[in-house]
Image (cartoon, rainbow, N blue to C red; front, side, top):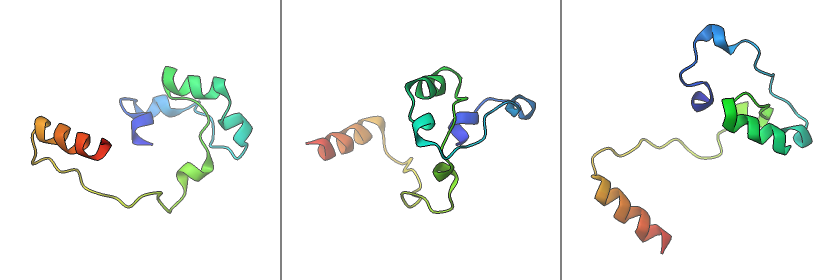
Length: 77
């Protein structure tokens, strides 16, 4: 959610559509496209639920870019 709103002033948040329940509207190609254009598409209320899909995990900033790359490649193969 924070990525969708990043860089916007609080007064610029007016006019965003409310989250919805209609999955045909949420999954519509035009709605998905508008997310890439200006992040103002309709999102599902499920996106706002209290239970996350995955547990929170802090990012490990102690490694180098090369070490991160090698870790990711090892998981891909």
